[in-house]
Length: 322
Image (tube, rainbow, N blue to C red; front, side):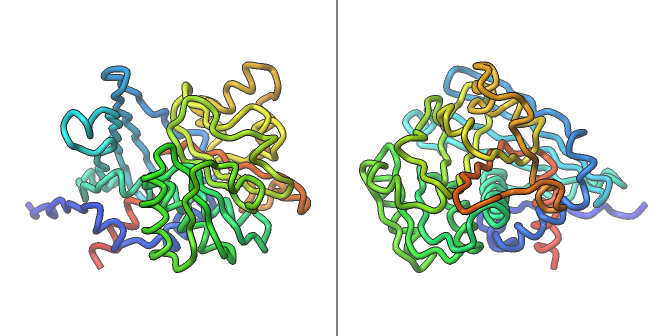
């Protein structure tokens, strides 16, 4: 009997070392082309609520096309820093060969999620934003806000970015780090209204349960908005923004189940499900029209889904081997 290959452990640093955001965008675009008919067949994520401040998300995903299965476990323990001096978010991705059932790798899930979330929003920005977009506003200062900003800067000629966070010190840290990483000015602001009407692109990356964005105050004609969200009780966008934008998503079924912004607009009977004009595969394959004019406000809402993790994890694994 032949010896099975040894399971590889891939930590956060190795994730970013072995798969760039630009490469990840290409991987995700390839996934949408290959898996168009598989998107609606993806299993739902499982949510385990440990207490009011702690959740565990379990997400299985399978691709017949690349013969890979992945199980991602993500944890969010809001009290971890003050109670135990540990990070809020953690978890792991198990990657398997679905042909042989061999376990291939254990991969840091926070890093992989941040990488593919950034790449996903970068791809959406390339498809939906104005080509001459040059100024970005960022609401949120976590790891995913960092990777989304980096990805967006790869798709458009960005000259300056602004960042707002509930904790100004977090915005300052974000500003210093990302200015160095991107080689362009990233300015921290204490009031998001300081940059509200200057932006061509707006990144909203929070875990807020109340809207942090206001259509009348923060949105201008022609803007493109990237918004992330994973739970029905969270709502970082106001209803007007959802209703008045041309709305595109990463996966329609997932957004209808999990994006509180969209769910609440439908419950209020302000929009119907067909307000979602398409997902990224529809845009990539030319099935729907994205931006129609320079004045359109386009909104990309993503909640993430396991097939993204399957492809991103496999790319990290393959690059690690070579």
